[in-house]
Amino acid sequence: MSASTTTAAAQRSAALPGAGFALGYGTNGFTDHPLPDVLRVLDGLGYEAIALTLGHPHLDPFAPDADERAADLRRRLDDLGWRVVVETGARYLLDPFRKHRPNLLDDDARLREEFLRRAVDLAAILEAECVSFWSGTLPEGVAADAAGLRLRERLAPLAAHAAASGVALALEPEPGHLVETVADALAVHRDLGAPEALGLTVDLGHCVVVEPDGVVGALTAAAALLRNVQVDDMLPVAHEHLEPGAGEVDFAAAFRALDGLGYRGIAAVELPRHAHDAPGAAARCRTALHDAWEAR
Figure 1 (cartoon, rainbow, N blue to C red):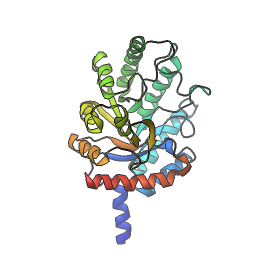
Figure 2 (cartoon, helix red, strand yellow):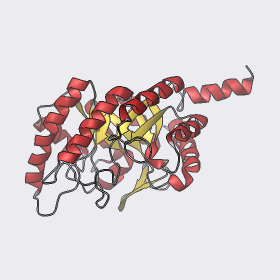
Figure 3 (cartoon, rainbow, N blue to C red):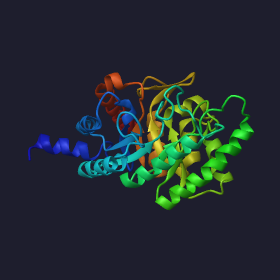
Figure 4 (cartoon, one colour):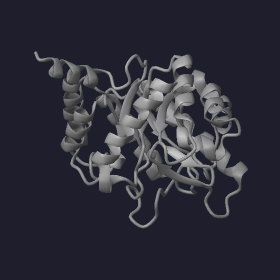
């Protein structure tokens, strides 16, 4: 084996040298690529995990062959030596007219609940490290207290299903949602009796928008329950996913915190509006995140 081949293999085997967590990329940033090509591009760039968004175009959870396709994907991931988390943020999967509806707070949330159960079932086949999800925004005319009760009532059976399936859940705080901060998510976890199956997702970009103690404070607060990390930059004034370096996230500090906390999960780039330049964005992100890792 030549020296150049050895170097390339080493790069593919460890996206961030010495990191205890795996650097991945979200498939929702590759919606113009079929899934086999997503894996080819990301493998060539040295990534070692994916955050798989269920729905169009990569894996429809309601398709008759969804279980079979998930099993095929697991075999491909095994060939690559990759890890995976399941994401559930597809915009129009459940309603072609209303983005992200119904959610867990709506009057009738049965379709969302069914979708999340299917996500758990597919995660079990995929041997995914978690199913990441969010609360959703308040429906019109529903007060926050009433919505909070709905969320807790609907999460309890989902957590039980996940526990029975051997799958971890990861509740993600989202700007503008009922569960907006890590503190909100921790309160839900506590109110449900601290179910073992329920953990947290932290999106690094969200931290500069809504977290009072910033990215390091949010990661530290979530540490015991941290199951999943999403990587993107953001400006404090808007919930808009940006490439690293285009916002105000201190990625060196974030990586230093993850390293110090002993995080061993996946940290996957989430750029759902960058599919027009997906290979270029993925390449630039890998370079920027390597630089941040080295600077930590």
